[in-house]
Image (cartoon, rainbow, N blue to C red):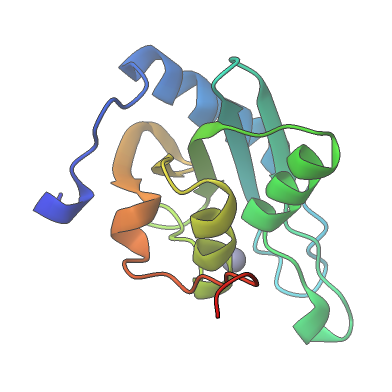
Length: 146
Ligand SMILES: [Zn+2]
């Protein structure tokens, strides 16, 4: 883990495991007929709620939405905020890292969150990052700025 990814006030390890398992369960909902690359994500709120999501693909490939964003959109549209962590799981050595688009959305809506990544074949081996570490100097827009 690089120093910039040092986690401050990360959820306890028990919650990492719980969140990674929730992401693995959410992965079962993946709609990925083209790539067959099934990804699950789960967000943890500071109230202890967990919201899962999975990737959804389109025949028009560019319309595909990643599991992290599906989980985030589900959570936000259900009125959930204050995310403390997100887990992402897929069958990939070392686990799937969030793409740039997801990093941007996480930077906007979950800037203080920890990020836990795991391979679905080895849920006990969790790599830990932070949203800030994964997207330093993220794009921000302040409509009130002069
Ligand atoms: Zn993504």
